[in-house]
Length: 261
Image (cartoon, rainbow, N blue to C red; front, side, top):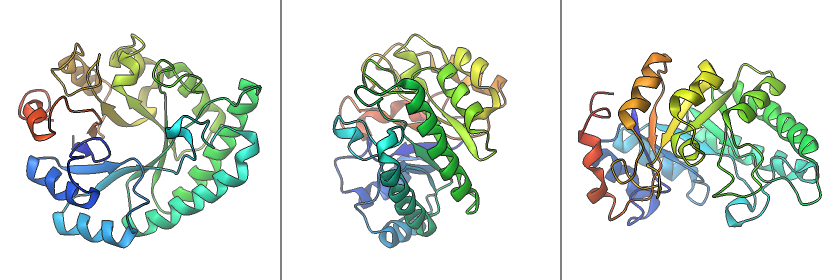
């Protein structure tokens, strides 16, 4: 398995483009970036190529979600904004060629119904899955815990499974975030029992604290074993907040189970 550095959370001591080389020098196999759009796509492409680092994942633009708003993916009134975000992501992806893109579900609008929000999200995911399928790029959606992000539409593996069933497209997959599951008392094994082979990407951080492996209580050996048993062949992406500098937080990278992934 490729061990991936999430450059939106790691190496933040450096400007974004410089983080690509830092991740390579630290021993990562690839990178992902939550929202790379402030960097011109050609510049990111050139730096990825210079460092020999694949871009595994990026997110579609999510509106005001990261600033505490509802985002755009599940709001029925924001369908035009989602279409614009999809166009922006497609244009950027044509240049940087990520393996996958992630659609953040967002929060249920105040006064809105959960059912209508789910229908809107499914329709938007279908549009994205169809559009990115032509580029050979997978579309993902993930469950995020409602403690850190109150009101978020998709929280559990069951929510995610039912959403994928509603979308019914071969290019729409699950992203499994080990931290968000642990925050809700859900193990990797339990999540995989629900999601099965729909999981195309895995992110991790320890819990509590969302720090590096070893800073909390998550059993990463058990995580790795569960993924192996499930036949998972994708990447493992480090999406944590270092307790010190990023370099100081990387002892786990030389330890099992990550060393032999």
